[in-house]
Length: 297
Image (cartoon, rainbow, N blue to C red; front, side, top):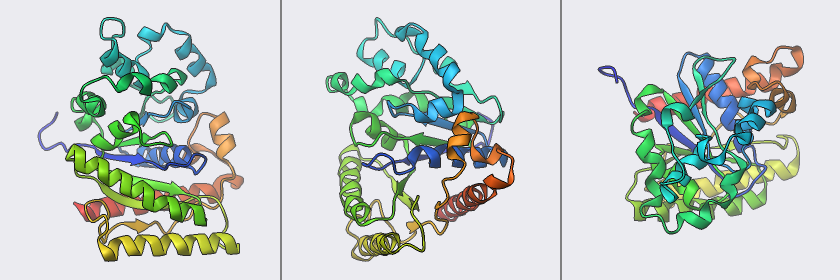
């Protein structure tokens, strides 16, 4: 660690619901941050491994999971090494992979076998702090660490929250998201109180839908109202303060995402007029996130 070097800002992207844009937000914001000169680490803690496949490509991912399970050096290997220390060996130095198109972007990959990990973590002492113990050694090597969380609040997700400074909630602006927002924040606060950790809601990202369609306009208004109530009533004041926000940039245009995945690139690297709008949306959203983090220092 160089003198004066700061610890990375660690941000978890979390929602109980799947299909709300967590992976797309994580990967595309990571790409934006990296092309601006930041060293960025993406940690994929979701057994679906979507961030991993996006940044590694399907062929490289297939090569990874063809290796003996005990020697893959994935997020799964990390947890398994605490459950079965005589079988699984983990090395954080070999676990982090560089990204081929941006030399400041890195990946700590997931794998499908993680789907069974929760059954074993219940017997591991201090299971929520496993990820933290390895990140302590590398947190000063990056400006940002972004964590793609699974759609639950089990022990792997709690590991992500335990190491995070902030969390972001990606959601689709509908009435069900408004209902889920309250429960999600309530459960995260319960965890942070027991774990004695400081964590703040950075903001809510609106994904999909349209600003001009009534159901989505109403959903956005309902989410705004719910967040305002949390702030005004100080219901979850340890997590949600008056700087928590709904980001102004609404990722309404998901055109290009499937192309980005197939090309193993975040949107910021794609060329062509058809990608201009989604690229601009992620550029603007990333600007908002960086500005909000700086204002909190």
